[in-house]
Image 1: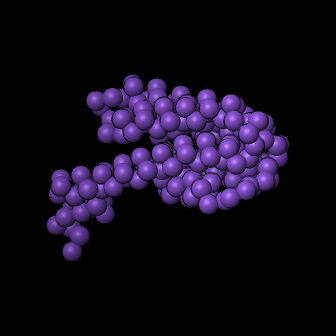
Image 2: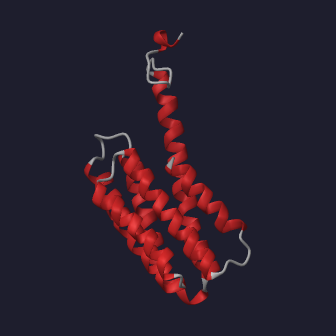
Length: 168
């Protein structure tokens, strides 16, 4: 779900030629709110962190300005990125998703760090930076999901949560 949300947001940022500040605010805001629900639903992010991500989205929606949307998004992505990086480092070697959390966290931190430098360039540049990070994360999580599904089939699991002999 997270991959689809990130890739959909990334596609919007690529194909919107001349976005206004309202498009920036709505796109970033809805992306962050949807991301908050996705990471909360996945169960690997605590409720307060998902809430921070959602509040960052609400901040982008409410400010309706380049600076407000960029700084709200940067704060939300930084918080989520730091948490994922820490979890990736802590759980390395013990958790299948640790490497993916580490990469996703670094991408989130990088995106958050870059956003403030592009405020003066306007909505198009800000959506480009945020969309670029979203596309990288979306591809990462899509590949991760497909890899986990493929690996589970190799272990006698049909990919449906049931052992292969119980599927028929």
